[in-house]
Image (cartoon, rainbow, N blue to C red; front, top):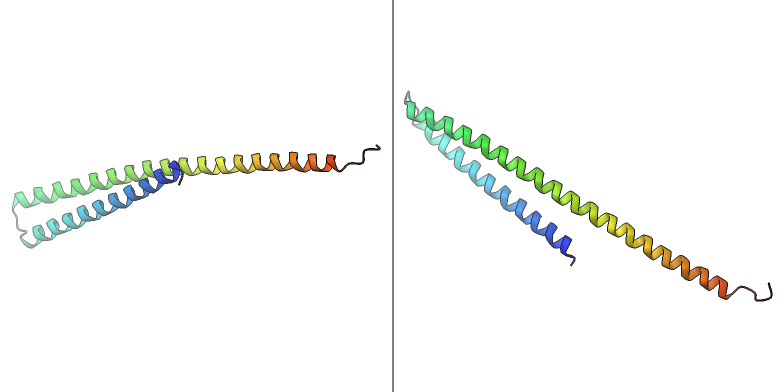
Length: 113
């Protein structure tokens, strides 16, 4: 397996891991919010916890989004490189075939001309 494909597979696994971490953080945040709403009163500490939780959620989502965009750009770049390499390989094979077929035709050309 080419190194580029292995690298892409590693990036996909990294994205899956990051998604699992993001979902775990989201579940934790939801649990904290539920606990806060169950014990909610006019307590300023709970309001501060809710604000910090909301800020953490927003920052986590932003960080995850930026990392996802970077990974997608990285994978797209490598897919384009693989595509270009496959086109160049096909072009080289076509050139070899054309040269071979031309030589074959020339070998069969009548010698009296």
